[in-house]
Image: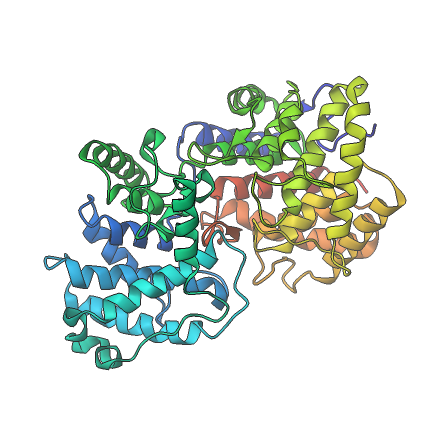
Length: 531
């Protein structure tokens, strides 16, 4: 069995000066924050604004939404297709306020003008196509389009001259590729099943108008770890449940300055990914105890949930097994067996499309476990071979991998290369070489890498891929590419600017602590790399 990068038996801990200080500061901040470090979400904040206008901070949320509107009238980050859902959400929230909140803390003229610009932007966005594979987009988009049409048909909205042609009967059309009837069909399946399954709790707002009474009480006050789903759920709940959910939303809003993130809390997800990233160059000694504590608290024999209101999933379960091994306290990978499919792992039970990164993490976890418990290998060998071979089939012909949990192929490619590296068959060596060649061919003029623009996050992933390749890691082309990348990473460490949103949930988001961990770890790997 080959050693796992970032780990030797039983584990690898060391003090490395500036890196140790940076890692320790990051781990301390993550440990002290029970919610997680992520920027507010336009989509979620707008959904809470629409569903719960009575919640503390309503005026602040309206003002913030108006500030986030672009000069083109749309909302959101990333390329045009990613802006559809945030823009629909914001426009619907502003229309709902115009209809139902006569005492809005923002002038109706200002709201109406923003709605007009947003509707015009939606007309252009709706014809784009190429929609991202974000959570439940096929339900959320038609649901919001229907809600907007209903608002526009109301007399009080039609009387607003500030919305221009929309007050004279102009209407949206359903964006290309979506089915207007799908939310109704999903709601009907829920009725036939006697309730909304846990799989749909995170995006419950997409069917809440049709299924207001078919969700059980929510543990901790948040439904599916989603502010939007929770606001939609409590709109039809009893006073006792409203108080509990309202308290949870208010507490969360105070953490995020009155606004709402894509999901909360993300502490499980955040802690596992931070610890795994910092273990690549060697987990600093000062972080060892905390990493072990996190692994002990998070690991569960029944599988790990990314947040209290979500289903157990293979991705978080695999990372809990991996971090346990990297922290020197290995835990049995048996919980992963619940997610076994024919030749790979489903990320969660009932998944529609497989995840390359979840399977890469599962392969890493099994490899790390066997580095501690080599005598348990026989029963796992077949599963590891199947997972490895499935990952190889997911590689694109020019070298990268893609994944549904992240917009960038650099993330998916780095995860797959890291998982495949200890498995030294000719096929895996060829795949890693092809990935490294692709990385070398895609570096930007400033030394960064990025799917849309160069980012420190994606540059960190590219550095990891090049350092993992045994094909030409120390050739002049690679050496020059790594040297140029170092400037990008160092500038990022010195900067306080937030990292751009590249991760997929319902819309794009950026887990800041996780990205910082990737950047400082890659920089340390560069510093200690010996040609």
